[in-house]
Amino acid sequence: MVDQRRWGDLKFWKDYAALGKENMQGTFMALGTPTATADHYVDITFDASLGQLAPLSETEELKVRITKTDWADFDQENDYSNHTESGWILQEQMAVYYYGRLLFGVAPDSVNDASAAQRTTIAKEENSIREDQSAEPTTVNVFPNPTQGKLQLEVAASAEKPVEVSIYNADGVLMVTRTLEEPTSTWDISSYAAGIYLVHINQSGLRTVHKVVKE
Image (cartoon, rainbow, N blue to C red):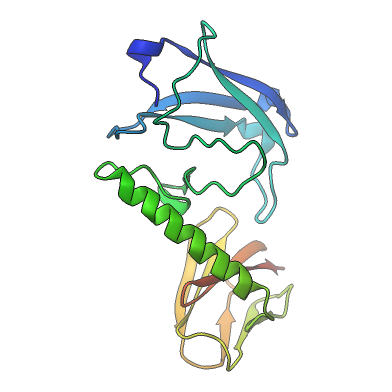
């Protein structure tokens, strides 16, 4: 928790970025509604000259540090996202947003942080279940890929119902969404610009993503 009245100014250190640390910036932002365990966050942005991050790709490794300008220690006992593990872990208490929509993790709860911790435990159990399920053969096939305009989606008889399908472009804009009623469906994307599209498939909470190239 960042109480700047007590701690003073903070400094964001860029140790390494595969994309070039000179292209990365970190800004300390205040939460609009502070909670008992969080009042600030770090907004990490990249220079526009890098262009867009391609779907299903990654920034590669980033190494950053946060210190006080006087190098004094932090009191991390009530920090919402702090974790004592030194190795790599799945940290659900680091929330990831995209255009204001929560995509991953559990954000600090301004009403009851205990309930947020409980939801984190539930999310961890659900993730474990879904990871086991994802090891099974896919129950939805998307073809042809690449396509010049028509997509076929085939849903196996074993697929959990309902099956909801949404298509997003590379900028994250929703193009179309439907609930599949039949085992086979045809999608006409001939009017879409050439590029990469993401087909999001939701089978009763089990989510998979297919990358499709429109020629």
